[in-house]
Length: 177
Image (cartoon, rainbow, N blue to C red):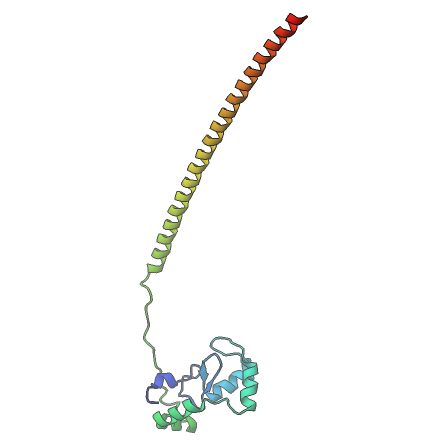
């Protein structure tokens, strides 16, 4: 394979080179001793992400396919001395700790600043929406009041017309009698 670095071949539990690596369905890999210890002492879940592996582990052990053979062959060919030391139990004296570089995603306070800016924008947007709603409500109230005023004027005109007709009718009745 050739593209594997020693860091890629380290068990995240014991921090030693993989011996008979076991790659679980969640794609996390452990060395066989750490995998067995995890299954025996902890549970049938991945110690890294807590994905349940019970069904997979039973099937893989029954079919004798727990070990990631391709990765194991690559590790043995790329790092034979380290593998031999680990198998012989001599790797304890020179345990190498590989520190991955710290990746800064954001500067201190940068996320808080973005959060507060976003809150400010949301508050301004909410205020604009409330102002629009208020103006729309005011316009609707004015329109309803105008319509009501027009309806009142029409009723008054109708009432005056009816009163006029009533007076004329009353005069006619008085004249007839």
